[in-house]
Length: 180
Ligand SMILES: *[C@@H]1O[C@H](CO)[C@@H](O)[C@H](O)[C@H]1NC(C)=O
Ligand SMILES: [Cu+2]
Image (cartoon, rainbow, N blue to C red):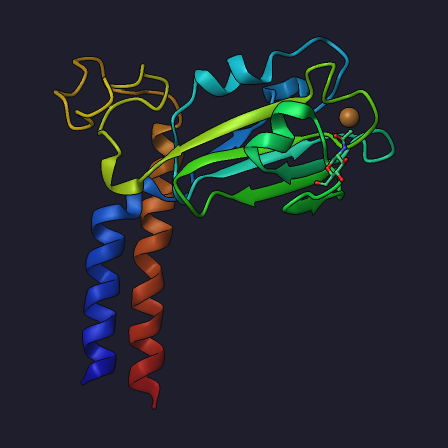
């Protein structure tokens, strides 16, 4: 019975939050993660609304770059010696698991100082508005302000696929559960 309850809870959760999971953002878009081209990564980040469950992808040549998650203090001073997490594959998908600031920098000498650093501010999933991820932030303290009259077109269809996919997860559990 507890199993059935869990399935129902999961089903409800995925129904409510299904559309919120899995938005994927390529850091620096087509330019990727580099010092060439003078990408302003914080400007890039400021045009997005990151939520818990979203994924950021760092694409880069790992002979010349890497990704280090660091504290705010180390982010400010571009110091990667005591990084929280290291990524070196050249195509790193990082799921944003917590709300709040996530600080990333390149650990190669001089790169962070040259601007290869990004502050990813993640807002809690429950506060996700129904409008565009590109829409400006609502004023702080009132996250549930009226939705924008212009709904998002950006990635809307892929979002539907994600919803569908997530809806299948509890269904799979259900099928497995009946098998035993
Ligand atoms: C970087 O941080 C480490 C430890 O967090 C510290 O020992 C080191 O002095 C720092 N380097 C610089 C250049 O500030
Ligand atoms: Cu670099």
